[in-house]
Amino acid sequence: MNRNFLRLAVVGIGAAVLILAAPISAQTPTPDPEVIQQGQTLYQATCASCHGLNTGEVTGNVIIGKDLVNNVFVQSLSDEELLAFIQQGRPVEDPLNTTKILMPPRGGNPNLTDADLMLIIAYLRTLSDPDASRLVASEVEDTGTGTGSYQWVQVVDNLDNPLQLVNAGDGSGRLFVAEQTGYILVIENGEFHQTPFLDISTLIPDSVYHGGYTEQGLLGLAFHPDYENNGQFFISYTNDAGDSVIARYQVSTDDPNVADPNSAQILLTLDQPFPDHNGGNILFGPDGYLYIAFGDGGNPYEPNYNSQNPTTFLGKMLRIDVNAETYRVPEDNPFVNDPNFPPEVWAYGLRNPWRFSFDRATGDLYIADVGQWLIEEVNFQPVGSPGGQNYGWSAYEGTQRYLMDVQVTSEVTLPVLQYTHDMGCSITGGPVYRGKNLPDLQGRYFFGDYCNGSVWIASQDESGEWGAELFLNTDFVISSFGEDEQGELYLVDYKGAIYRLEVQK
Image 1 (cartoon, rainbow, N blue to C red):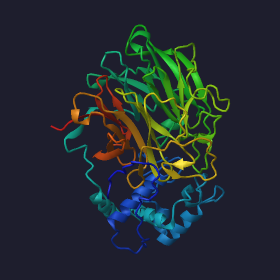
Image 2 (image 1 turned 180 degrees about the vertical axis):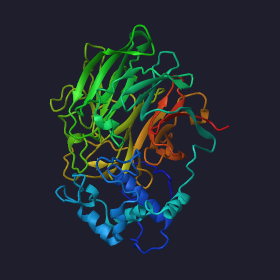
Image 3 (image 1 turned 135 degrees about the vertical axis):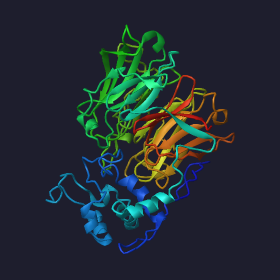
Image 4 (image 1 turned 60 degrees about the vertical axis):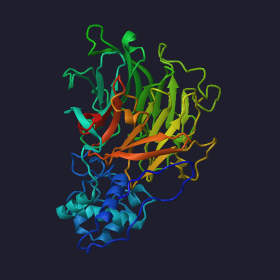
């Protein structure tokens, strides 16, 4: 499969990238590997959030949908019958609907054509046919952990759903990993301390512990720029009611590797209407202010208008000054004098920003925003920007118009980079590399895909044109990237390990 990244010199491209094959029937004796691969990509992008592949898979919510591996119902229907079932969906009141959760027509995605559904059905057949599954695997590109001149070297493993890796900037050389299950662990000398730095596991929703896919839990961690002196750090999580919380904590006075659990101070809480699209990344900018990115509030069946609604934090990036009893709003925030917006808002039009970062050398801001059915995107905000950008969702998905009835009241800032769902299904943003060990990668922006483990690098040339290229294929479930104090690059594998990027030996 061609995985060349789209180069966007100017915005406004509109060509579809997915190559759809003709429908195949149940009588096809040897499925085309390319057809199955296309079906797998569509399945990951549109079905896996509800239908897990075995109960241990991280890409499916087994609470919502039935497991489709060796599924008797799927096996009992012909391709044509299965197509008709997916077209029609299954209402809650159907006595055969044992989940008692609506399966909407076409899986809730009206953009799926019958040809798309037949590709998905072709892939579903492989989930009950080990020979066909091997056929797919033989067509997948190299999924080793290192190719070319670089490799990902394991630092620690045996973690529980790690979502973020950060450093404290205090000169200690320690790394801190945030687990979705509510624990923050200290990594030192290649091992993690058995005693957690902080445990908030009793504060987060029970759904985090059910073993299926969830976007709730402990989602973000940021250390105050003066942490070495004031001992303050901040976390982002969803509480047991499913709402987003930003809270300040203090390190304990007698042990630098343990925080004071009684020091919690809640700065703000945001009501979340659905359990997905929480966002949750927090990060201090070069200006010393805390930036907070919230998703649009979710809703698996659309439409969603929160990101273009100025009155809510949903679908927005906030900017606050935490050097106060709770927090202050910076006087130069873009909407301080606009009564239509909360003054905390820095930018809007985001769907589910999953990891943003500041270039530690230039101060430029990169925002990776997870797409809907077709496009994953990277938004760019140069240092010195006054803020106020509208990144377009849900009027736009990437550079393409999406919901035509969404009223756009300001100029849309389109992404500088995007890729379609034949190359992955859920972007994970990383940092711009500024370490010293890998000089050839200096100034390259890293990002990956949660669904297929691909990692890309991107940069802007002297003419202002952005481009990106495939860096490494991996078999990781990439939940985050991270940096140590020296700017060396790490990858967080949601399956439970941390890796550092090194020159291949």
